[in-house]
Image (cartoon, rainbow, N blue to C red):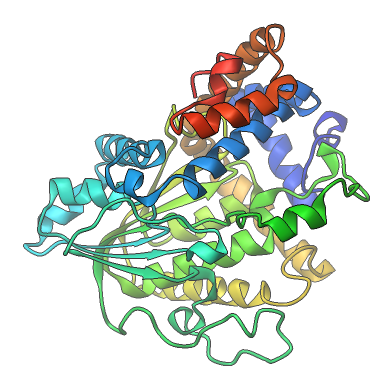
Length: 414
């Protein structure tokens, strides 16, 4: 492990170090992204930008009236429609729906409904089932209505019955919030499944704002010491639940589209490799909406849902889902599990390392270009109007104009 890579690892263990060193050595696209990330890690303008971005997204999703959403005025709904259209143009994910007279689609993380809306525009007779996070848990409303859409407000990460787990010990931290009742009927199959749910921040109330006001952060970690977000128990719980449910309800040779994070994480590529064994895998990253983030789409076509390798993967994902229910979640892990992961990563890099780079290179290149452009824009904008000096004026402008975009102050084309 080189000194340069080990000092910037966000998940400090040998498997991730092996992965990072391999990509730095053989992928110029990842080396460029790695360098740009280092440039932004200690930049206060970058921190302020993402802080403002989260506040703007939260305002748009939680505070905009429902009638505006239904009229299609929400920029997030527009974004999702555009993203679905471009994803289909690049990956032809909707072509699977042409093989049947009654197309069927399942979408977890459906809200605000852009992907489902695009499906209905192309296939008006398609049958769609959507599972969305309830509003009280941080979910946002679906921005359109249709008789062909059956919407269920449930946290997909808590659907123990649909995951296939009935023996939930009472000692589990989440035992009270889990449900063993099935949301999807057994044997119901879909041609295409979108897995797009992800952890969200719950809307802050007056009580939580008052409680957290001026409270100092204890044991604040530096960027190089943080565990990467894509390995958090909440993220893994939701991702594993979606994958298990998708494999149980996808018809043979169907298509799964999974929103994932951090293509250069060892855990992500181990998951990708398991899906690789029973399907045709490709990666896609939207060059506008995901350009400055680590999000990307995994597209699995011709999925052999009844194969032995698929059965092994489903059981592995089910067990990982159960492991996130405890108090400690999946963070850390035993020495034995870490050794097993190191061995698995070592074998994967030796066997398919160059092929993994070929798959992920466009994803890394798109993010590197996006971050490079962002940092240049922030450098210009910070000299003119630092956002932290006019937050009160921004709040007033937001109340007067619901479509106000705070990024105009930074001259960033979000």
